[in-house]
Image 1 (cartoon, rainbow, N blue to C red):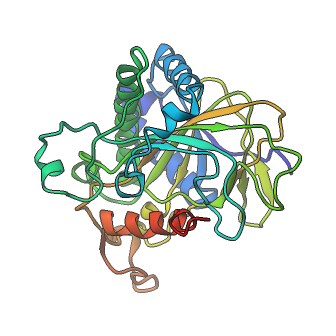
Image 2 (cartoon, rainbow, N blue to C red; image 1 turned 90 degrees about the horizontal axis):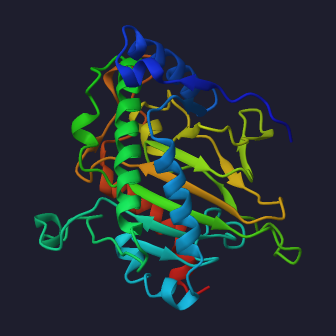
Length: 321
């Protein structure tokens, strides 16, 4: 295990709209997406007070009594909203269930929203714990990282020889999920192969991760070696997901990663998974197809693709294991 380099990308010019900022970010993000699938972003424009607030929100929700948290698990497998108990998820189906708990928040919709009433896929009501100002803080953070994700996609589009706004109408009502995560210290009596989060790739387009100072994220390089992704103050860790890999005809790569909390301390992190709109057609971009590289994937809707991945992740709980 080592701390081999994961690139750090300064988004100042992209966020501020400075001349050349979009093109510079496109080049650096594109290179990282092809080579490692992981990169840090700094000068991202998200306020430090909001980051402190979402970290406090994560601590608060997981400190609730178990009965209060479990009351927020209603129809989770249908909605992808609410609380996921310890060992309620299995990111690596070949290993025991993950040693973590989570709380999922999606796009905020009103009960009478036409998408809710029509039963559209991945359209559901969020579940909210009874904590002062918690909902407002979480939604403010959700909207901030959603905006950052769309900004990063402008650079991605340019790198892939598409219009900067190519992804905009595919991410304006996304199946995005904000996950607050809590990992206990790795117990001495854990089952063989059981860790905080099993080896996996993420499902969507990109992930924007806010880890705490404890660390524990590990990334598998192309040569198979595992490297640490330490926390960098003021920076997010971003990675490419399988859906964007599919969109790019495997030009971009999603990289296996895992969480091993060997620190002896509680670990908290906040991950924002930016999946496309349910009805977005995920098909190979023209700039990623050539005579030597024909399309490797048939077109699929964003919703159908995400369903296929979530079904595998939660299969063990459906069987009662």
